[in-house]
Image (cartoon, rainbow, N blue to C red; front, side, top):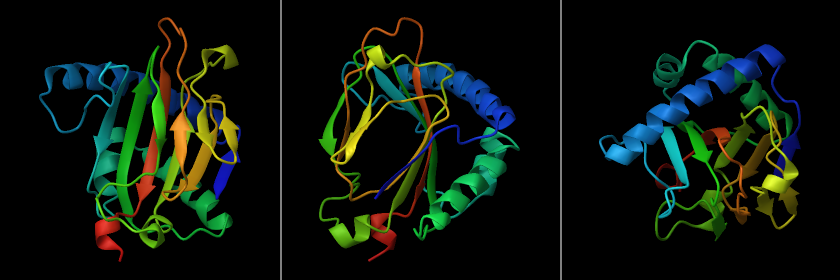
Length: 195
């Protein structure tokens, strides 16, 4: 199941998230370049995609709120409400993260599997939610998050929710100059903990 909601966050929360994303974008790019921290890494050999990640949270809501700021809790609550409204049952929070991409970024078809031997019934329980947190996007820039059910433009303030068993990929990001494709995401559940 793939759920899409446009204009998801109220304007004040979206602009707070956008400012936070811009700040974390430059910090995490420096950290990924130095390979000095577990919080950030490059996702592509071409170094066109990198992240800022708070992993292995095991349900801890304090660490992301401390690292990201007080409005994190508001966004987390809104996402949880949307997940449960769509009859999905979120497991405990595993990860809160930003993902950043620039010209040339592209991800092939994949499932969100972390471990060899993960089973489909485990992946169906894992819920991921993304909010595109850049303020502008032109469809000619590409970068669609694609599922077998259709392609989703990375429109600002668009929420996407899906389970880890959904095959997906990202179409190539075309020349976006100084802009960045920015995502804020939450992952609920981890295959190792839910058999």
